[in-house]
Image (cartoon, rainbow, N blue to C red; front, side):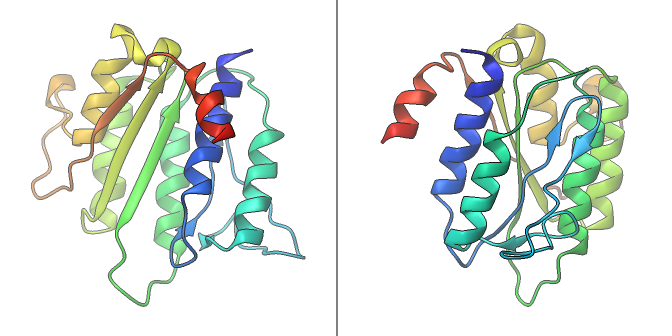
Length: 188
């Protein structure tokens, strides 16, 4: 079993916990960031904005996740741009919490400075209302990955000489040290 499968299982677990009043999508990333194209029978909005977490939309996203394959590098910045773009393009009628659940099984191929500058810039466009919760699986949960994932979750790039933005919503870094346990959780 590969770590990529563990990442898919964790995504599926998150999706299974969604409620209809939530809005969701998925951004897969490696060398590029990719969003599900949508299914005209269900919704066409997944690639442009978040969709309601209805059972049919969750089923569609679950199927999309199951079809993912790992390739290329691990560019965090592209995934973050896509995720923030979805949040920005989604019309809101209420003050919903905006949260990015960032799951990775690899250390970034791009520089921490670029990653942290992107988070600062993109969140500022949304009035610093976005919280980031990072999950590191396998190598990303090791000492190599914890530093950047913690900085991302706290939105604190001072370690990389990126000025701290005031009034951000701090998230958390959650290491998944034993990704094989995810399969057991998925089965319920």
